[in-house]
Image (tube, rainbow, N blue to C red; front, side, top):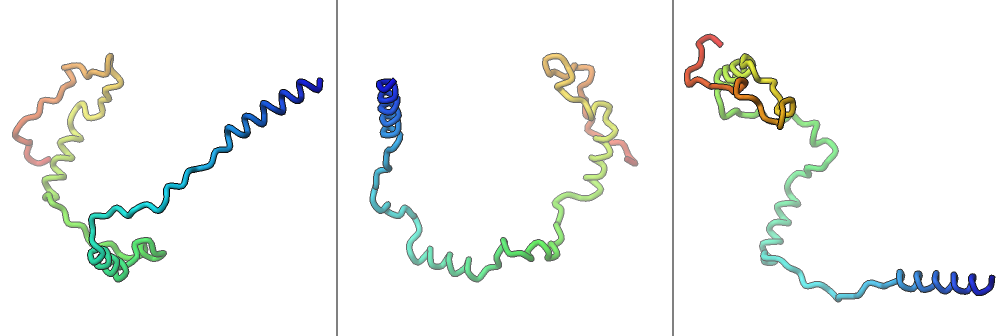
Length: 116
């Protein structure tokens, strides 16, 4: 009985000694930067004088109006044409081997119907 307790205690102490490893000290790391001290100082001055994007009331301001790069009528006509396509809701996962059969393929015409 005593021998088994001694062996168990020895095994636990060996495990504890193996697990307790300290980190090695590598000294002070040299800074790695491609900017000069003057450039960093200039960036710090700009950041200090700009508004804080993480402030409490930032999201309560009125957002500026967004400008679109496309014409509203063109986008609407594309949306209506897409909505009228017979296979707009097809999911590839619904078919064998995740391949949409050829009878469901979209043949797009160059001209659009008037009045969409």
